[in-house]
Length: 400
Image 1 (spheres, rainbow, N blue to C red):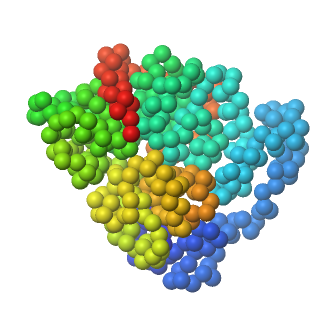
Image 2 (image 1 turned 135 degrees about the horizontal axis):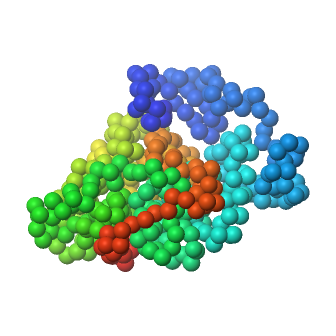
Image 3 (image 1 turned 90 degrees about the horizontal axis):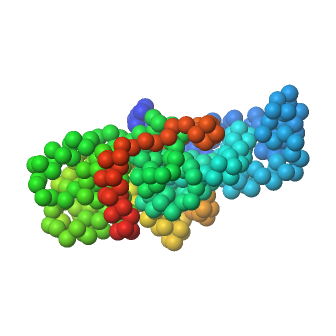
């Protein structure tokens, strides 16, 4: 397959298409020659395989051991608390990283109980967050619905800013925290509440359907929100012949192809999905004739056309789980492929790997600091919150 798209887009070169990667044995091919050694394999040659007992012994011999979160516990206790998580994600998390993740995962899970906190994680979060600390891990719609059900006093959103805002809208009396307030979204930043007001003036009486990937002030000017999982259903539920659909242009295009309702769109795009191309999909097919390609509807039309299936993140997960294709390409964010792969070990994942720089701002260290000190609390003005909550609640009521 072609090399990772994220790097290819940053540093494209005509030689890129000569490179292939076989994920199972972790072998790179150049013009079908597999005599090359990957950097990962080369680095691993300098390290012994992961050995939990050896790592714990080194921790106990360290001068810092008395200050460790594990001080006072036996080797067996430490291993019991951390090893099961690693065994689950070991295929996608290198051994040399685990020694850094394990103490934080343990401490975060301990803090959750002490503070009656719940951690929500989006599908694009890294495996150590998605499987290591999340109480609820899902797509945007499920997170919005589940956030309303929680009895926790504190909600930590491992996602981006609009997701934390949505959780706050659904839980106005709870403390909602975001580990990094700079975790934004290209779609959310592409439109403002004033933009929506101008559109409503231009198209009086036309309902506004807003993708959940938007700020609270945009939601406040909308009639109803939607996610990629229920966009078509939401549009058709209004019983009208025309809607304003904001802000993702490509998702609007996808909805238009699946409904007779006329769609008036905005020109926003997702910086992750807009980079994929139909040619890239076709090139991957040439090298992998038996592959199934599953695309997110935020992708450009030529990518959707070149794919076997297009759907929301939850639909993509369901497709892989039920169909169990021999080989699959998920045309979406990198970490989602890792997270789905963990649950589907018999499926080979070909990973184009477009990273979301905003999602990757969320780290275990930031989650720990945020929860421990209860910082980065989400605040929304009362009037905006009241108006925005109605559009989000309407979305939740419609469901999938």
